[in-house]
Length: 75
Image 1 (cartoon, one colour):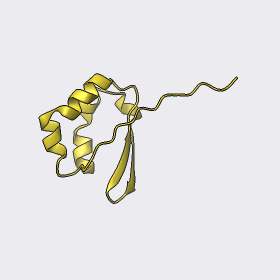
Image 2: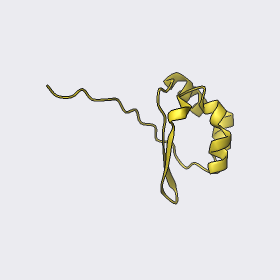
Image 3: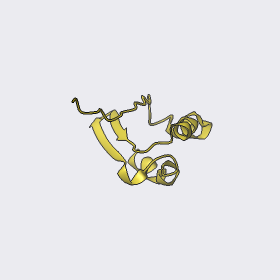
Image 4: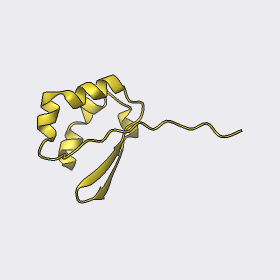
């Protein structure tokens, strides 16, 4: 899976600030990937692309996208 992810870096760089991407293995079947400055429309289009779905089908059981935004400090 790591090779597949690395080989797709150029495509991901068109939808986010790839230089800030963080990847972590949480267990044998789960990983957490964090993207920054994401073009959400482009991300959605990529995840709906039949070629992307076929590429991931043997490796990814489920994608669960989250959006995290900074909080303002309480005054």
